[in-house]
Length: 338
Image 1 (cartoon, rainbow, N blue to C red):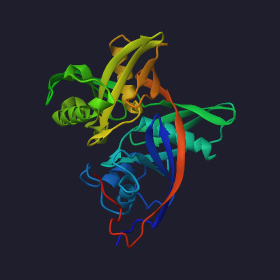
Image 2: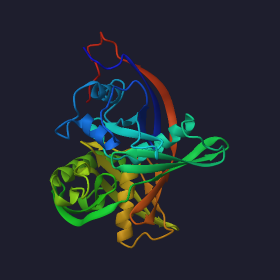
Image 3: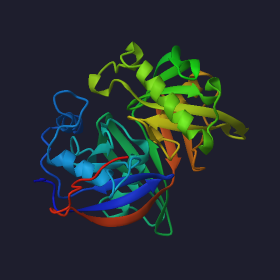
Image 4: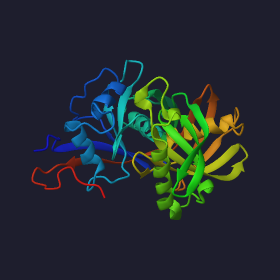
């Protein structure tokens, strides 16, 4: 019999179109002194496949159909590493637990203010400090007339680790750039694969992203220098140039992450990776802004602050609160994925 609670309450948000399902109660114990250690507990000894047990049953209940879907994303709110942060989070998706999530951090910032967990003025901004597996990040929640108007995510420092890495895909050979921005992202121009970033191209982009991720498995530049738990390509950013704006470059991207999920937003941590690469190329300087569009037409804007530090700004909105039930007589149990 399942050990998952028979009911679980969630707060659901989206940031620029990408969902984020928040759970801050009814969690089973998760051993560990830090968020990174709790993620390691959730993953188990192998470090890749989620550990069977109550926590992962809860993840599957919330991400799988009929309560979720293959593109669902969320987080378990856990204690921070110390009292310097307001909260910690374990990010999850259909394949397990990620090390970073920019859009999720933005959603959590809005949620923390909306629920009163972090006080905020009716007009002005409030900073929400969040411990994630890759370090401490912040979400500055912007307010006007008593409502949230946007969130700025400040990431851990981003490092460019390799340029023009040759990769063979089913669409031909291509050169890939790599950057660590809380997770390792591979960047490639969609046009180099004969593709664009339209919705019609999504099946081909998904295949290309999976090809690139598989080809880079074990590549030295995908390893994190300080923490091996952050190693390995998490996302592939397939980008397309659009006409520049008066304040800087403009691009559209499709980010394929984990084992074949497509980010509906422009990808918060992936935007950090793009900012670092554009800065190294001399296309983004102090005061410049990257306008980063998603396949859904939503927008993040990003700035490079120096020292690898990036800021990404975008919308975050609540979509609902839910009480999900697990009927012990339901033969589907925690659900399924197609």
